Amino acid sequence: EVHLVESGGGLVQPGGSLRLSCAASGFTFESYSLNWVRQAPGKGLEWISYISATSSTIYHADSVKGRFTISRDNAKNSLYLQMSSLRAEDTAVYYCAREGQLGLFDFWGQGALVTVSS
Amino acid sequence: DIQLTQSPSSLSASVGDRVTLTCQASQDIRNFLNWYQQRPGKAPRLLIYGASTLQTGVPSGFSGGGSGTNFTLTITSLQPEDVATYYCQHYDNVPITFGPGTKVDIK
Image 1 (cartoon, rainbow over the protein chains, first blue to last red):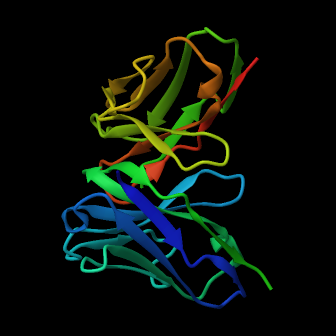
Image 2 (cartoon, rainbow over the protein chains, first blue to last red):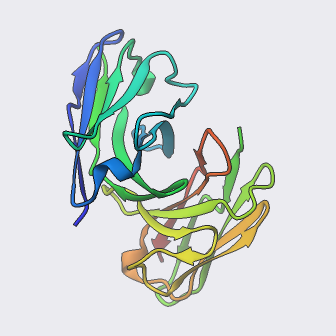
């Protein structure tokens, strides 16, 4: 059974940094692209980052470009999101999502809450 | 960026009703459109991909249609467990974007 479990969320001050992790199990991790999608409180879904299976292709949304970095360690079955220069508007639940086929997110984690506040 | 609009923003219907949600893209996205269900407090769940293909394990009461710029998600007979927000999402290019969602309630 596919499992994705996010960790590393919490309260951080504006301008601070945080690293999210997503531990994967139940599938051949190195064969799949992965994404981060976030959801601000009471709001809709926002795609923010993509990484291909071999890390050869990476995309970030304009809203986080230059501040967030997606990475993965296929030996550890783990996905990461390094977030820096955090702003209040980055407050959200952050989900990792497996990309089963091009552009479709077939499995999601339970989410990690990041709160940016002084 | 491709913009997706969804209508209505919310609806309330009776158990057993047929419900149709719409999603409109700002430009032609062929059939590169997925639908997700998000129940309160839960992660999203893939329902439909490629505009009309039902994801494994999703009840047959859900169906999707459309191509180009206009798409629909239909629930044939609304059930209490269908109370959720439904999002469309395109994958024609980067950035991937989601629609604002349609919240479905039971009357």
